[in-house]
Length: 181
Image 1: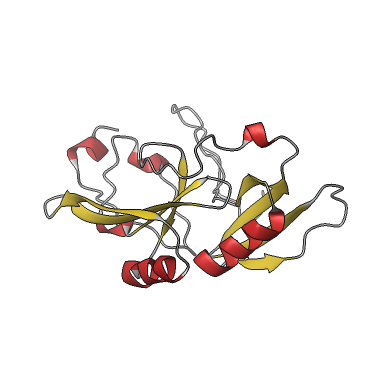
Image 2: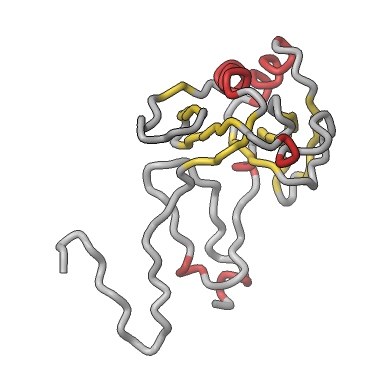
């Protein structure tokens, strides 16, 4: 066994040791890769990076904050969202944690990006500010300060794996649900 590898669980419990994982990238279809690259660079601060030359289709890779966005030129616009101007927080979206919500809101205003702003929660469970807006192809994005809410595991606390080199929301280890594991 490699000296950096943790021993496997050979006890009575089922072997639930999964390797550590983090989000690597999100892939988005685009009407125009060029327009989407400019949006993600200007609105969210992503950086264009080189893409493997082996790909034989139009696209672009962007990266920042430990997350990649892979843009792919759509050959079928029916695969893109139906209502690119609709903002429904209960619909599919990707969310980015932000440490300065006011600065991001100013950026959206400067770029004339339509957004929906809301606050959810309260003092007892944490108040979250949210900004929802669409990319040029109608894929919804949320920007939030979700670290204001403590994660309270609903059992199986031992299965939670947090990356050591990334931002993590606060974790309440002493809730009744965590003890139920």
